[in-house]
Length: 192
Image (cartoon, rainbow, N blue to C red; front, side, top):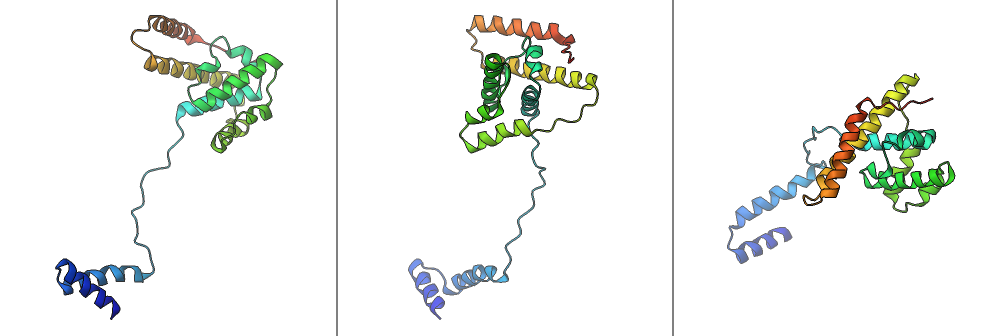
């Protein structure tokens, strides 16, 4: 009765037909009585896979953390500035600094540089990433060489995208780095 009074008042105020407004109110009012939520279409999208380049950068950092001998092997080709993901670049800078200063890396000190919870989680993943079991030394070397090459190529591509058209010195540096990468197609980092 109270609902009908409200419906009648609104219908008069807005010049609507009482019966039409009453049907509309009952229609929407009874939708919630079934006790179940209206079904939403399930998304057919697969969960997004992690970007391959992020994965390569994370993998390379994990290797550097696990085996500090790799610093000496890859420094000729790759530096901390070649990591294009912000969090990984910052982590790489800390790793390279620690290695050059102390001859080793300290994961706890690396974690102290990150206060944001999301960054903390991502950096912690570096210390707990499981590297696919590479049984032979040849498999390990092949994976390392491919990863170094991919990270360096991505770095050069990113540098080319950000390069100002008037930056002649930057363009020359980019061309030299690309040429060095081409010359290093036969790149072979040997793990002893």
